[in-house]
Length: 257
Length: 169
Figure 1 (cartoon, helix red, strand yellow):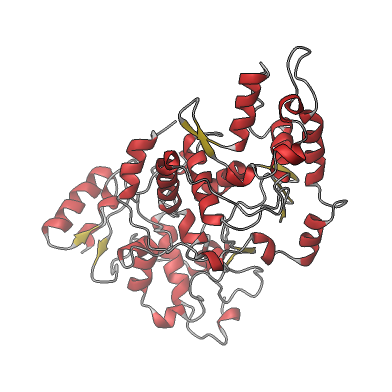
Figure 2 (cartoon, one colour; figure 1 turned 90 degrees about the vertical axis):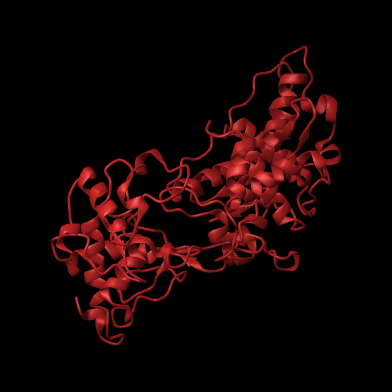
């Protein structure tokens, strides 16, 4: 991994962003600009392909990783009650590691600390399933960033990364998603870039993927070297993106083209 | 001016210094890095000198403009390309651009539009620019080679009549 948080921040603050943040009243989910048939696919309980992953997650939720260790449900009970309102807060500050942690990271930390189980790899069917299942319990709730001063540096790093030019093309997240949202990049309508529905089913992927997978795709398009899965830079970006998206409602599992 | 066109890294560095010494603004990115670029002399809002000895080929230039993995132009710009679907609308329409901008002005906008407007989204196609985390496959290389820039400049120069140019080439 290149660049720890502190020096990266110092470097990035030198870059002054041109774009203003999108005012709260003008924030729009990518859902709004999708074709009616894809909107219908997301909203139809029988047609949304993300529900296959969600069902995997539901199964894992109730399954003990080993005979002498509890299932998720063993501690948390009914996810519909205990997990409602969780995903709209993430990433949060994890006191045990003194670092921000995203939902995937939390699930793997829970496995290590309470279930004596190895972490699921990022983008594995299991981790996407459990994350989808947990996040879907907050479907319809407004994204609600925690008011936690311990997240301040992650927020600043995330914002700096969002506005930093990267890759051979020298583009930044902000150059498209703040400055040119609503315009066309070839066939694609540029969305405001709010992660309101992750993990989500993307027709292009033919599968469910995490917000980090999407960020990796964007960085590759900028001809930049993506951060590693689970890298602190990505968690910081997730934090900033969720701040930037609030209070849009969570849509997990969303469907996108 | 012919002396500015020198091949190779050392030649580029020397010429770059010569340009600086003679008071013409030189692109720093053009004389550093692996496989260094040919020197580029910005004069005002233009690059008057061709980057290569070979004149640009407008037919090759048109193909580059339409190529979405090479020139990338139509991802952001629309233009007189009736056969191309899904043209972007981030940058200005290219129709008639050759009537609005000289070859020298077009050249700077391709080479390093950020020299004119530091905030533009338009990539700088012929610099080893100050950016970070360049992907391994792209490191130390400009987006386009010097001759490709000249081919595109030559093609864009042909886009003059917004009514008929679609069938011009």
